[in-house]
Image (tube, rainbow, N blue to C red; front, side, top):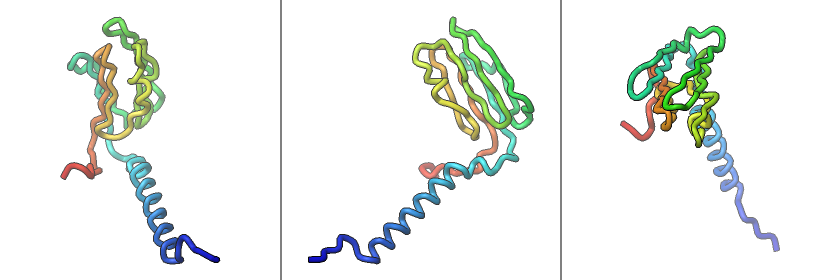
Length: 131
């Protein structure tokens, strides 16, 4: 007895949906990296006050910034087009685990030290939830 689980049309439909899903994932993941000509600025704030702004579009060599707020030492690394917390003495290190920020609207926060890094720039990408 030869019982087939899927027919040819079913397999073709599953394959087509899989290809579309991979293309959509690739577009969302790598689409923002294709537009490297936009001006990106990193704004570093402590307790709501701006302590430094870095034009990420003009950074030539990696810059390392060290801050010590609320008894917590933090090291921030800025490279061309991206920035991140590389080290922190805070207990949970969520700010370090956030990784690189490279798109407008990206944000990393260290709550114990009250330090926030925000990427500011022209956001050409539309959020699919907000309209």
